[in-house]
Length: 359
Image 1: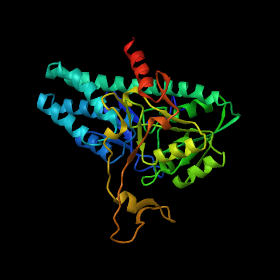
Image 2: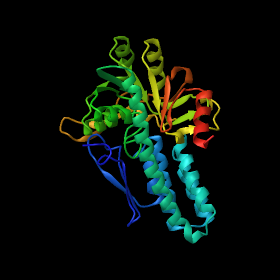
Image 3: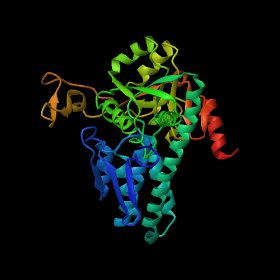
Image 4: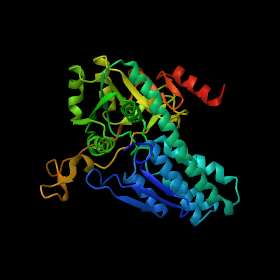
């Protein structure tokens, strides 16, 4: 099974103008596809984390806006649908970016032409995402080869694979490319409390692709680095500031600190669309706070194989559930993008921006 032709997170049927996504809240116990057939369904899929990962959130939102314009292509409906989708997740900048891409295109068109143009734009964004992620994988593979290891033990946090994009992924794309090139690779997958995207999603998709992996508790990762059992860390990014600060799933910052203390290279893989050029530094990034129930309760299979939800804390306990943290640029060794690899700094990102603009 290869990532490029079989594993994907969003299906698009142009003949039926139909969108299906994997319901990631059901993984790893059940693989279920959800047909998104209303603006409410698209908004719910994003806010309830049936789809998650900055690139996939953006692509899903683009299709959601196209669907809304099919129902009502008026200026009023366009603004209302855009605002509804934008409100679903505050941290991932790809959401705003994708909605802006579609909105700017259709606003210049007469209403009768808007839906078709929006569907076409969403599909082009989907195909671009696939191509960009594959290039991220190729650029990251060169870094992995430069480490000069016969066997690579790579650590990752949260999920930044094809479940977080459409195909390939960001942080996992170099790993898939390494495996395909014959490199002996093993992945340490941190569980990523409280929603366990590592143990429930990353480990699952690595297994689907035949990549050896081991789930470890979040709190054990520093010790693994100290023992010399980690060759590098690769994570994704939901928003990157113009100075190279990286906002990713909460717990990323601690891994970056441990990596620096133990001389372990720490890389962030991301598409250019995840960079917020208007954000000067990471302290300006809004950090999503989710419901405390995600910390106080956990879902899983019981001994009979039935899915159940159980409490973890004493009755009446309160919890703070910050979904993301910011890793300062000086803790990031390299930013791996579809345009190449760059220093995590204002200077490095200025170089990237010049390449994008063709200067």
